[in-house]
Amino acid sequence: MSEQTAEQAATFAVEAHGIDPIPESERWAKPRDIFGLIFGGANSVSTAVLGTFPVVFGLTFWDGVLAIVIGVLVGSLILSPMVLFGPKNGTNNAVSSSAHFGAHGRLIGSLLALLGAFTFLALAVWASGDALLASVARLFGFEQTGLLSGLVYALMALLLIVICVYGYRMLVVLNRFVPILVGVLFVVGIVVYASQADFAAVLAHRAADRWSDPVYIAGFFGSVLVAMSCPVSYGPFLGDYSRYVARSVPRRSLIVAVVLAQLACLGAFLFGHVTASVISIGSPELIAGGDYVGGLVASAPTWFFVPLAIIGVLGGVTTGTSLLYGTGLDFSSIVVVMGRVASTALIGAITVVFVLVGKFVFDMVQSVTTLSVLLVVCTVPWIAIMLIGYVVRRGWYDVEPLLVFSRRETGGIYWFQHGWNTNAVIAWAVGAVAGVMFVNLPGQFVGVWGGLAGGADVSLPVALLLSSLLYWGLLRLNPDPDYVFGPEGPRGVPSRSGAQASPIVHRGASAPIIEGASA
Image (tube, rainbow, N blue to C red):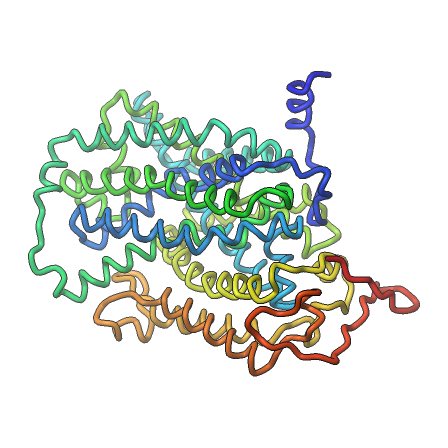
């Protein structure tokens, strides 16, 4: 069998591995594969929707571009080091977080991943499904109905489930070419909409005293925050993709791949920004009413309906599968009676219900968009603690104790206080709560302290700095035991000597079975 034939056969074989560490001999993924997975995961209509917020918040065109670029760049720099945990431990980031949050504390990462997946997966299905149906309806001249929309949502979700059941290799192959095609179509779309007469009026709009207006300032920083939500939301998921990368792959190559992948998604952001700007001139009621996709189709020339439909389908597939795959994988580590395939199918089915009920019963589309921002504010402290932990531990991890929770065991070097590391949990909780209280999204959500910074949304700096400083201080006041640091000891913090790790106890065993450490 040729190498190409073998790869094709492997692509259409259901992935055998679940949450257990991938053996080094089976780690074949390269930085370019990580690039493709992340690029495809964020290169869709749902990302374009995030790019519309500068228009919704009333920014001038170039201020909106600046807010988007700052948000994506800063978010990608915060996100990129999270790719290192996968090659280091061969498992996902939620499981790796056991080293810092404790065997039970890892549930914080799983919860963030689960909520983030439902949120961004719902946005992907709604936005992509609406773009597909609206384009096809205009092209063939039939009326859109709620029944048709629901059918499109369900069919898209079913397609995502099927792809994710096949697993990692299928996702890698899919993202080698689909994101590039979708990215090209986004660039074509930017040219198409920027060529319309209304775009000249967009560029002509000026607001001389805008930076003295607290509402405008709040809108600018709110736009930055929304743009950051896209890259930062991938923090809990990066290990899902990078666990197939060998430890020998240079860390710099992986970090650069993550940053470049997020920057490549600027095309989708700017497509949303340009198109929403044009729609705000020609059909301002659609932007005010939250019907971006309707305005998108109404403003498009007839020949662009087909590219819009392609963007809707292919962009939705790559984004949706990247989220569903990781969530199914992590859920299988929590509900151990279910394997990866069953967990993926269950999460997919729940997503279908969530999408349909959220769209047609409770009209949650706007609420879910706001939730995405709040989730990011809660995720940033988690990322900060993980990265500080990585630095002070010198990147040393004992892999077997990371799996205590998923194997229904107790004990091990990451058991800490009954499975919780209070240093990390307290720092995360304080940073997340304080960050949410400083959120200032005009017309959507304003925290109780959202107006204290003169209209600026400082939720992310507050969450990031407070959690980082508090965690660093707690590590000095209440040092972690020396056995979690490995042979070289801690970097920059003290350790607590003399403590003994609890033995790993296999439940149901007649006596404790003590697992040895592995570097």
